[in-house]
Length: 310
Image (cartoon, rainbow, N blue to C red):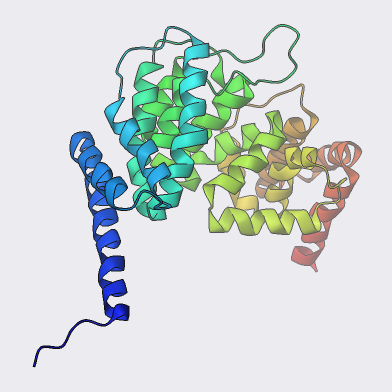
């Protein structure tokens, strides 16, 4: 006697068909085969026109179909393409692809934008504009999003005096960190903290480095400051107080004489050198200068010396 499927079993079979069709689209999307993905999408749409994934999948299929290699004519054209990627493609990827897969899927999209933006010069602040809203319309941050660290570094190097401009300095710092690790990135991290504390704080959040995150939490708890983001300009000095072994790495940073926090970092580096050499006479005047420039950090520094010399 042949058993007929129950209504519940038929529902399961029907449900599994939409899963099969949806997975068929996803397979072709991950292969980046635009034509095959379009065919699979149309089959899914014909059978399940109300499927919740259709809209996002359509965005991704169109992205594969509409790829261009034409260089951007100007920054405005790049801005339009970047907004499309950020506001439409990225959310669609997040909706239908797992996080790790999604990141890998987006990398060629960012790489394509970076290649098309290669001929555009860096534009930071426009006349009358106190921000740097145009800074992101450059190849370097796109290379970073693509995970192409060396290409990002090369793009930054083409910007004149990049180390004096917050956005390119941040891009180069991230590229250095991603390629060579934290130890190699310290001099640039220090320079970024001095020049642009808000960007320094944002970069620390983006890097996701456990040791940096722990140091930041400790700084937030211990630093005698205002609690504002500008406090991070003093992060390098504070760090030398708690980790003086970093002095040699920090000594490679370009001192920014117009920045008090930069001068104090260099001053503490000199104090640490004098301590090592045992030059007590010169230490007195150097420590007095340190105390004058930041009494709170000087007290923290002296507290470590009292512990050492008890």
